[in-house]
Picture 1 (cartoon, rainbow, N blue to C red):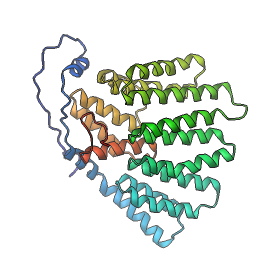
Picture 2 (cartoon, helix red, strand yellow; picture 1 turned 180 degrees about the horizontal axis):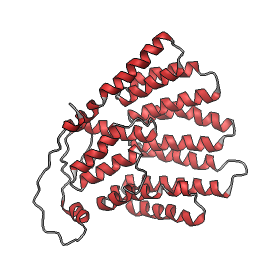
Picture 3 (cartoon, rainbow, N blue to C red; picture 1 turned 90 degrees about the vertical axis):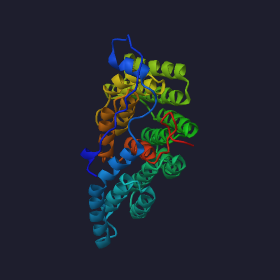
Picture 4 (tube, rainbow, N blue to C red; picture 1 turned 60 degrees about the vertical axis):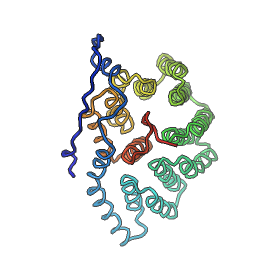
Length: 324
């Protein structure tokens, strides 16, 4: 079924008169948790993109058959399999890529691909297994900055896979490791503190401790006065939107997330969820369509696609989180 042919069923609800002047705030106060978008519609959306992905996959597999050492095609085929929801098959491609790696950098790249691939499947333990050796190798090479970044990547994938304990562990490792950089600049020191506060706010929000989440969020936002680089400050609206969403303040979440990165599939997925909670299924579905059409293979798309596929399979609880 073509994407444009998927129709969104609008659910009419009787709501009490709302005296609030801001329409979306009114909607957030009056619309029930019932969704107007079905799992079937999400599944149809995902299926609509499969032909193009299958075409690219087939082309890569043909090139690999002609040259089994074609590293770029092994990577492409693995990424297409991830996007198709076939991460177990993708892992086999990345394992071949790892065997072909001739340098430490190539091995690290292959292992990170394997980690992100497990993120598409919501497999926190698989992410850890694939990327923990990367962290160790980078620390051994005294590359504390990249070791911290990979640790944060593990934390992010685990958090959105529903494993907050593991997520907190890896975010903490990321923060402490990043600060081990020799002669670290004041600016980079500030960046690591900001990232840790950002992570702590999200962890608290997911645990339901909204007061703590807002406290950490405000502290992160205050880092702009302490020399936080502008390329990091752009992550403040997404943090505010994230905390607001898990606090149940969907109107604020929508406002903040619309100011965040428009090309980030994870943010756009969360924005779609906020629109859906506010009772605007068409706007929500438009954001889900954006996510389904993304090919930005990475941690953010992995987490967004894991949520979408869980939704399509009916594996979410009443709060919209994956069931454990």
